[in-house]
Image 1 (cartoon, helix red, strand yellow):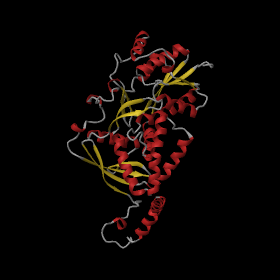
Image 2 (cartoon, one colour; image 1 turned 90 degrees about the horizontal axis):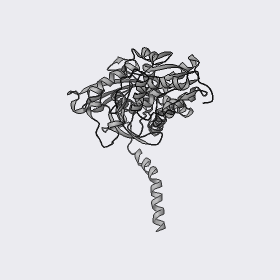
Image 3 (cartoon, helix red, strand yellow; image 1 turned 60 degrees about the horizontal axis):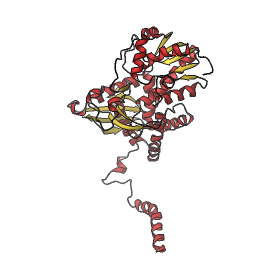
Image 4 (cartoon, helix red, strand yellow; image 1 turned 45 degrees about the vertical axis):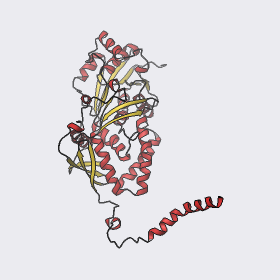
Length: 403
């Protein structure tokens, strides 16, 4: 870099990678390093993190509780859009990254730091998600991505570096897989999971029981929505983070929310991911159930056509882009009527909608009934069908004339 870096804000977890990065930044750039840890519900021990960061060379540590903002502004945005990447992945990691990067930029501004750093590798999606957010919010920021700069090739190299520099770490050998956790999900990749034919071992799962070992009795759960956002479970109003946590525990007990997929990374390669997303799996089913009552047919079909595109933008890290801003406004407009409740039945890995209701329902039993009614003249369907069939008949007539 042409400009000397005096101060950098590092996205820090206290794990092997970021502990080594902290020391490496000071050695390589001779700069002050300020650490930032985001609490997005990863259930990691944040106590003692400041002491560890300072002992490794940081000048200070910020810890930000982002759990409510994460669920309210990011997870629920994806939910309202019914955004699912490649038809399967609910994007727990993808949704957390722009929020973490935004908070990191806020700290850089507060501290007057002209550079930020992250521990994402040069092979994955996270580097893109972090850096697109950095540049969108602070165009002149300098970004340091150590995995794209240093000579370390493996986890063993990092452990050796940590040992030689007296960096306090817990890691002592190669993990059998990598894991990312937040309030929405847990992801597992790499190591023993790199063979897409190999079944994930049962002992990796944390949030969910296997369907075979799930709770023996079925459970019903009712979820209330207001303008597309879930607001209550079984009649109890809950904050966004508390609501998702409640459903994670309930879904996990019943084996709901496991996904095993080979997905296409933004950088071009395929990767195998195994995910646990119990609460969000329940919310997606419930949300669509309320939408089925309250959305006009053409609006619903338009939303469904946009869902894969929204998921792609989230997965790629295009959160702070003009196209995503525009499509969010459209999605929010469609959600104004999505108020009501859905009732679901959970049993042995299954999540089934068994009821839905809304004061804004467009469903009319009077029109839909198969019994005798006085509101619908069935003879009207004849002209409707003939008009829709006209182009088909004309094509057939033309084919016959040609022969």
